Image (cartoon, rainbow, N blue to C red; front, side, top):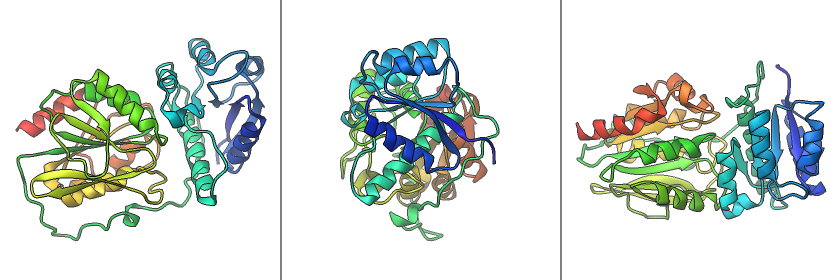
Amino acid sequence: MGRPIKVMVVDDSALVRQTLIDILKSDPDITVITAVADPIAAAEKLRDMVPDVITLDIEMPRMDGLTFLRKLMSQHPIPVVICSSLAEEGDETTFRALEYGAVEIITKPKVGTKQFLEESRIRIIDAVRAAAQSKVRAVSGSSLKVAPKLDADVMLAKASPGTPNFRTTEKVVLVGASTGGTEALLTFLQALPLDCPAIAVVQHMPEHFTAAFAKRLDGICRISVREAKDNDTLLRGQALIAPGSKHMLLKRSGTRYHVEVKDGPLVSRHRPSVDVLFRSGARYAGQNAVGVIMTGMGDDGAKGMRELHDAGAYNIAQDEASCVVFGMPQEAIKHGGVNKVMPLTAIAAEIVRYCRD
């Protein structure tokens, strides 16, 4: 096993600091080297130590987290995971944190059911692991464990071989992304024309954050972008973003597609899960689907993309050079489900070309 990931925790709440320490210490590949109450104290500690990852609150005394983040990224870039209650509200401040260089946004851990606390632990640990592997600052020689996880079977049975899928004139684009995906999706969706095929997106995000994210994209992109609701119809020139903490499945009625938004356990350590969306696409769209896997850590989407491929879909993976973390595209490539690997900036044009041929 390689050396542990060294983490600095910055939060003004003593209770939150201790909770984060306990969560992170539960993973043998992570060690908390210091925990401080504000960015001024963090800056003093950084004179003597260099963490691999910093977890950072936004609202703090003496100096706010955004100011610290901007200074850090301009002077000594270190992967930062924003851990803030503002993420629950989808506050605009959290989007600025991503623009300033934060790798991930997660909600603060809080008291809840045993299942809630376990899911919170998984999300926090995965966010730190992803940050450690990001291109902001790589951790060399690390060996990261992957805990046992559920697959898409818990949400939707795999289609039997030979399940008919009829080609239609309407294509549907299914997109999965995680770490680095907020900016990747912005680049991708901005490049699409008004008459582009219908798009369904799973981006790993906190609950309530996706509505604000979709609204932000809708104000920037030519196409319509919004958070999906159960039974929403997929329309040309529109992208639906899966709500945080809900799975999204593609369904079909005749030649029209709609989405099903539903609860369920974490699949491939995530909810929403890319594997769930892709499996539903394999079942209900098949050769009428285009699958896209973007930047992110782990393997969510790899099995589902292979199922899409086997059902006749055309699949694209973002290339390593343009990914913040190449994990998800790399795993999809290894599983043999990818037709083409290409830079982020070329994906939109390739989808338009393919769907018009």
